[in-house]
Amino acid sequence: MSSSQPGTCPCQGAAGRPTILYALLSPSVRDWPSVPPARGRCLCRQHRPVRLCTPHRTCREALDVLAKTLAFLRNLPSFCQLHPQDRRQLLRGCWGPLFLLGLAQDTVTFEVAEVPVPSILKKILLEEPTSGAGNGQVPDRPQPSLAAVQWLQCCLESFWSLELGPKEYAYLKGTILFNPDVPGLHASSHIGHLQQEAHQALWEVLEPWCPAGQSRLARVLLTASTLKSVPPSLLGDLFFHPVIGDVDIAGLLEDMLLLR
Image 1 (cartoon, rainbow, N blue to C red):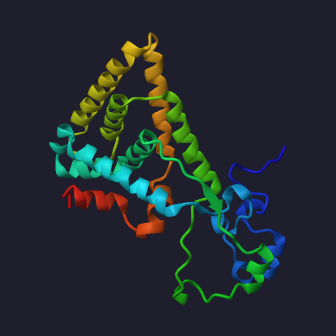
Image 2: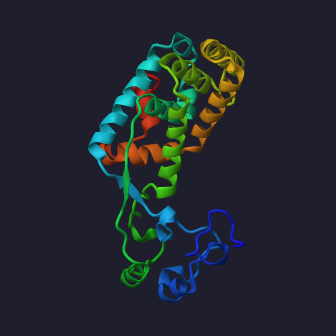
């Protein structure tokens, strides 16, 4: 059994250093630090960059979901009545999971394809020596990896298997939005109470349809907890950057909700 650490790739040496061939041929890694390298230098298939097969269609569907998420927040009195700073903090902390719930509710499907990358030898031989961080070059924007997108798709499929209805999705969004553990809240106790109310409402919706309602509630909440493992940066890079460029989605939502 391999002794490599989780996330370590066969194309890397010990302690996250490049392989011997790369270190010998590439002048830019002469003093390589003992930190994991960027994903762009990894050759493993799971870490190769990918992009949407149909970016305009998928990004349009993603923008529709974002608009619905915005409408949900605008039409939620318990959210609109919170202190502006609390609304801003909740939005920044929860927009990713809320957006993912919207993708699941609208059954947005998508496929990705690997982005062509040069061979490692070609990349080494064509690499120009750099004079340090002050050379004025802007590094290429990292693209989503195949592994990250596959995990995102797995999270969506888990929700589809639950076969939730509109009310269940609405109350589940409330349990995620009203998170009292978000840093910087003025009224964390009140927000915790709102989360408890959302939990109770979700339970009341689930119970009539399932004798084992409590276990179904636990399954729903457990599935929802996986959404936090999907970084918002992945959502921006995959669904929005191909069409609208480098945009701070949380900031965009704040502007549309007149929070700043």
